[in-house]
Image (tube, rainbow, N blue to C red):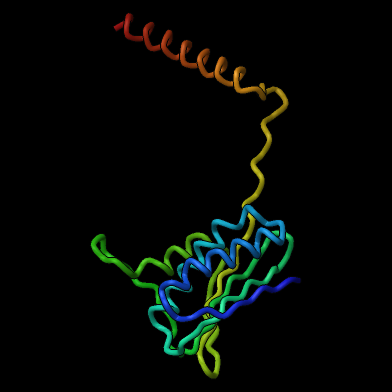
Length: 166
């Protein structure tokens, strides 16, 4: 399976570069449905590395696990393992790992002899279910607008009838 990896300077200006790197990689792998989520996860993990790591650089690695799964990992030289915090409404920091947990299939940290790897596995969202054959599908914009207007008109008639009965 393909792997993409790049080293970034541990500075805030690197975080947008990480986002572009990740988006380019998943797009090259023909996985555009994962681009936004991979970008978000990589951004959160990279921001943590910028803020907490000790060395001047950190590494971002993307590994394609299957046709619909990618692992995003950030490796730095800090041995301090991240912990999920509960941030209050006024806090400027502390929500990153909760976001990573919410959008990933799983995430974890691998301690390394010289630092750590924080990773998250992402999966392409399932395709939406097609409606049953008896549900009309309106493909043109005009047909969709007419359908919505009919639904709104019927709803207004029902509401007017209910109001008249009161």
